[in-house]
Image 1 (cartoon, one colour):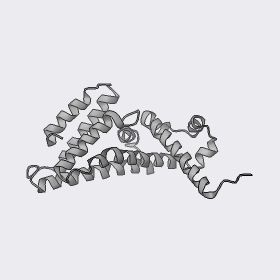
Image 2: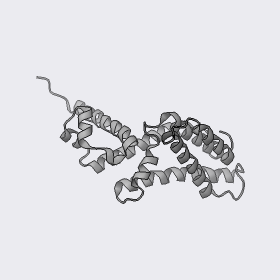
Image 3: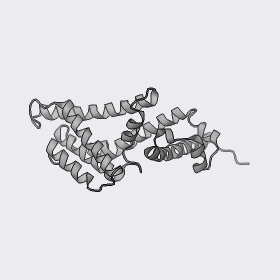
Length: 203
């Protein structure tokens, strides 16, 4: 009789967990994190409810795992694409262009995961809300670093308000996601890039 080795067992458990998380990200982008149910995931993935729950313990832990996975995907498709650009204005422009491209072609089916999650959890309290807010704060901090570096390097005008500029950049991206997802307007990326050129110059 074949006996599964501990190493193989751990590897298969990781793959199963990843399948659950991947499908959960897709569902959450369309229907929100509260749209995740253990029963639905079990049915779609051909698992028992206990099998799904066994990987996370609680629905809240599943939601937190989904937030982490969405952050990893964003980092891979946005942050990593801009990493070769020199710090400062060039990196800021590269990050923003990668951000537009991500929303245009690389985001989950429901668009920007964090835009949807922020709308869903902004008026709540608890670990999931804190995780979503924390990811947004980290991303805006990184943008702010490059704004301030661009000012120090003479690439942006002295007196440029980093907080205001980051606020404006985030506003462009929220409008882009809104245009693509709610209005189904394929011109939205063009307008977003035009807005970015006015704020920080061409990519």
